Image 1 (cartoon, rainbow, N blue to C red):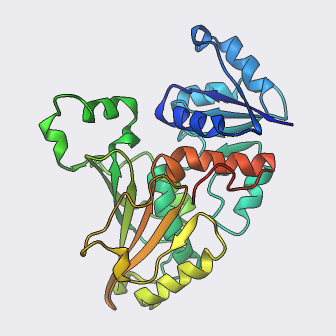
Image 2: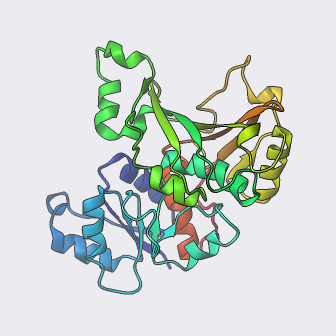
Amino acid sequence: MSTKVFVDGQEGTTGLKIYEYLSRRADIEILRIDEAKRKDIDERRRLINASDVTFLCLPDVASRESVGLVDNDKTVVIDASTAFRTHADWAYGLPELTRTQRERIRRAKRVAVPGCHASAFVLAMRPLVEAGVVTPAFTAHAYSITGYSGGGKKMIAEYEASPPVAKLASPRPYALALGHKHLPEMTVHGGLQATPVFTPIVGNFYKGLAVTTSFSAAELGKRVTPRDVQALYAEYYAGEAFVRVAPFDAEDNLDAGFFDVQASNETNRVDLFVFGNEERFVTVARLDNLGKGASGAAIQCMNLCIGAAEDSGLAR
């Protein structure tokens, strides 16, 4: 028996990618809305309530509206906006977060898909807080390098315009007022009390993302070496299909001394790295911002909710 799935907001980057994943599945029946009725609230209500799972790929306000259209207790809603990521009644869609998070998602009727930067940051930070390496009062300093697809259709069009726009050839830091929309979930699900100091940077490549967070010995809750941190990660994520912990400072982590931000593309995997020395170290979490950073994570959550194998349709 197939699972009926509706994607509300299929026209956006995340929605299109989710549809691509779903269209490969023999166990999924996709409910399609007529193009002329895309904004017809009654038709959207009908399809949402006819579905076993509805993905919301909409701005925050529209996502809240769509949730209000659910009038049954069977439809699972998986939301890709920022609207519900720190809401107590919604499961945060990061199964690897803690030992109990996977089961919470499996039982949930409301799941909030994490943001791309947040997924990378949280998976690197949460084990350190749980182990007391840093205290919840720690003020994290992090930056992210990401491909332009994370900016959606408008940004993709800008970067792929012909002739190319010269100013887009170099990396561009943004959100410099330090109020990025992923900060609330980074704080809450990272296990922190203090809001991180976080700067994202968009580069002239389509996809791929790496969040780097820095630590010094004086900031730590207890003394550890970078090798200790790598071993901590390896233990915390042992058995996780979609988290790979790289050996400490191994030569094959770099390409002639440089880090490849795009090497996790086309997977639903997060790769974790630790670099540094006895006095200071950095963690780097790398993922495909359209995979584990968005649509792939949504499919992983759906798999849990419908009782399918967690890795169904997803590349490691």
